[in-house]
Length: 126
Image (cartoon, rainbow, N blue to C red):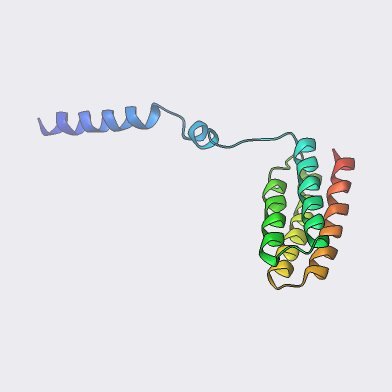
């Protein structure tokens, strides 16, 4: 009886684990974009952040806008060359966020310009 009880528990546990794919569940809530669409979205977000800096927006607001661009840049996924260049873009975006939080909007604008040039370069690698 003890062996039967252990076998039933093991079988029910195996059936529960194998009844659904964890990879499918993990991917269910994620929105994916085509690389070119994601690149265009990042360029739009960078332009919005630059406009906010030029219009004299608050530091936290500018940092929030740049963070949105950085979040979208994570979605750019085409090949290894694009990934390497995208990591450089993301480093400039992170530096721009840090500069904006430190109330140094001029330096943040410079990093945004470098990031924008890098994102434009990503289009050529596709």
